[in-house]
Image 1: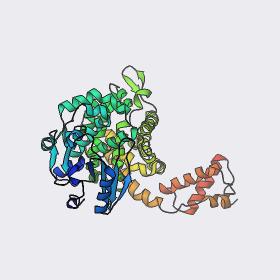
Image 2 (image 1 turned 90 degrees about the vertical axis):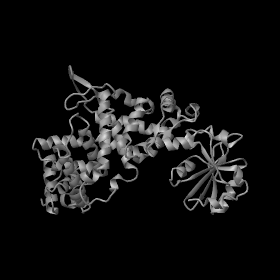
Image 3 (image 1 turned 30 degrees about the vertical axis):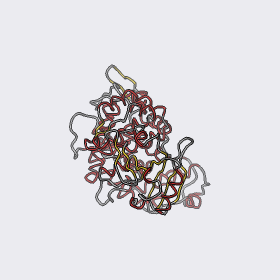
Image 4 (image 1 turned 90 degrees about the horizontal axis):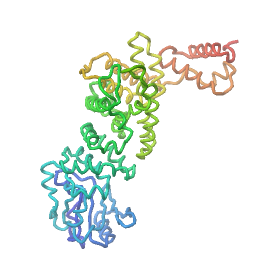
Amino acid sequence: MIPLDRLRNIPGAENAFLVGGSVRDTLLGRRPQDYDVAVFPPVRPFAEEIARKIGGHCVDLGKPGRQIIRVAARGILVDVSPINGPTIQADLLHRDFTINALARRLSSMETIDCTGGREDLQKKKIRMVSAGAFVDDPVRLIRAYRLAAGLGFEIDPATSAAIKTHAARIRTSAGERIRVELLKILAGESAFPWIVQMARNRLLFSIIPELEALKDCPQTGHHDFDVWEHTLRVLEHLERILIHREELLPAGLPEPPAFLGNGTPALLKMAALLHDIGKPPTRRETRPGEAVFHGHHRKGAEMAENIALRLKFSTRERQVVTGVIRHHLTPLWLFIHHEKSMTPEKAATRFFMKCGPLCPLILLHAMADHRGKTLRPVLDEDDHTRFIQKLLTAYFTDFQRNIARPPLITGHDLISEFGLRPGPEFKSILTRVEEARLSGEASSRGDGLDIVAAFLAAHGLGTAHGD
């Protein structure tokens, strides 16, 4: 935290002001993560004085026409920029929301509030400074929901109406800026109500137009809802599952589990939001009132890839979102096999091998997907939940333990024992042996060699070992 007393005597401090989020957070009793200082020009000499006081260095961040100098020191960040207008009050009137349009004179810590920001903090209200705020910077449309979600505030009716009026403007904003705000909303424990509000105000459909087709797209079979209502219920159930994950995951995992680190819950929720976007384009009526969606998981992953590219998701973020969508039906197929008393161990092992670290995410999604299909309450101990829990346990215990052990045979064995030459079939053969090892079908080198011999005989490749 900045030792503010050390900054009050900097030459020019009487004309410099702490502004924005740091003032808001301080008034809320929160510790600011960083600080913004607005100062009458020239900016650089004042920034250099701050750097000397706190033992930091200056970095130019501004774009043409907007000078910003960042002072960085021992985990402290201070962004210094020129006051926008002839007075600090004029600057504040150009800001987005009243709770961000607050300033404190650096020399005296006098609070300057010309928009009613302190009252809105007390009322826990997000209110625009003016409707022009959304015209000046359309990213503020989604930032309203990010602030509301993060602070537990409500958006006031006039601001909500203005968001609906200007929703389409978000399409002119840079994808990476939208992505930052959207993932921050989804990172919260209860993003669901804010996503619902964004949809009602058409902002969500302006950001992701592909979701529009989910509305009034009917489903049949085990579904009580159209695709859009089902999607919202999946997101709602997923958040409940994540909150109560300790009751559902195998005992002994760290908290939070490693697979939910690095912002992954937000990506899992993004996958839930997009998991059925492939249904409208793949919907085919087999007869009146009945429809199928063959390949919707593949089509959905393809569409999600394009959305993620448009919003400038990182490679890893795209892989998580599209991977969950592409494989989200696999747990259902495994469950159907299980219900028909077919042995799923080998199929489950193939799933674990193919999807690797994504498996726990796909399984949590599957649990939410199942619960989001029906109006009837789904008991925590129903057959599907027990089956998913069994797969989670198998993944984190047997599979994780066994995958760390050395394989039964290697490519050298294929060469020395069977006279094979390295080629495309090597991977298929070794994968077959590894699958047998991980599913418990094989446990020794001899077992592995026998599997290879049988594979070669069945495919007419090479000769059996020992010949």
